[in-house]
Length: 124
Image (cartoon, rainbow, N blue to C red; front, side):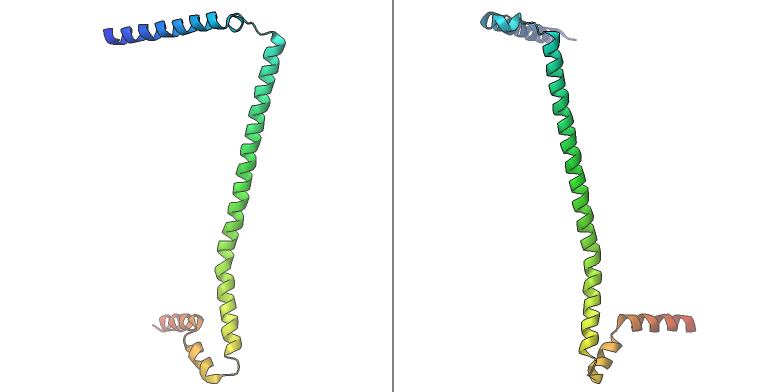
């Protein structure tokens, strides 16, 4: 500790001491007040109850967040599958009676293209 640090610490201690003395003169009842054991226990119990309520609220918030995240994840996972399946059914019903349109869409069907590619690889 240098000389400047000790002077700064001494000044801080003097200011705090003066503030405590001034507080004691202005509020003598507060300065000399002693809390009874019962009052200390009441205050302690109140703080424990506040802490328990705060922890309970934090756990509730975390549970709500997890539930919300699970629901959103399920929607994001299922939505594309439902959309693709719906589009395939719509195309199937649209081309049911039109042979030209059926041939056009059948040639671009990803399942058929995948199967043809797999068959080509097996032949090699």
